[in-house]
Amino acid sequence: MIPSPDDQNYDLIAHLSDYLDRGENPPEEFLNTAPENRIAYDALTRFRTMAQDILAGDVTAEPARDDSWVTRILTNIHRESRAGRSIPVSHPSPKAALSLTEGAVRGLIRSAGDSVAGTFIGSCTLQGDVTVPGSEVTVNVEASVFWGERMPQTAQRLRDAITTSLLHHTELNIKAVNVTITDVHLRRNATPGD
Image 1 (cartoon, rainbow, N blue to C red):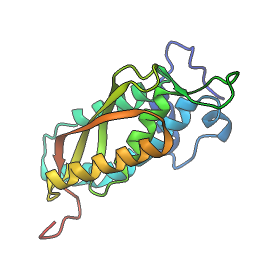
Image 2 (spheres, rainbow, N blue to C red):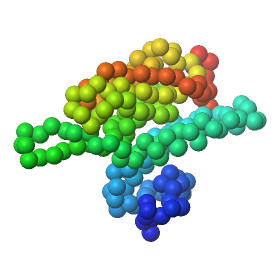
Image 3 (cartoon, one colour):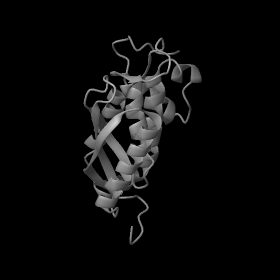
């Protein structure tokens, strides 16, 4: 049964997590019902893959660990997958009115950032009036890194990956991509020198 987002008790992340916990993929029909379903599923899948090493490692490292960062990231994935503002896309025909959703752009940012080795995105926001073509937009990203990653170089790799993705897939006028490293995590299978 495909849940209705209009249901007051509906929780997209919990619904998707149920499938992943069982080792299953949600039905394509569900993923294609709304863009936020696919965006949230892709982000949740990437996060769970990267977090496995951290969570399993933290069990033995700290008896009283703080997992609030997991809750924050899951909440951000859910919030950021929603459509948000419409971002106009140019077209040669004056009769065409094309747009991207802000949620789709945040999905691009999260995907680009998560592709940088040793990192994953905690949250991302677009600051500026994305609804007006040519307006300057600042991208603010919070990220986690693994212990041993050189933070200045990692932040620059994140900026580069996000900027490249946005320039390739959108017409946004990117003023800046600000990266804040908010968490550092140990790898479960860390070896000396990691």
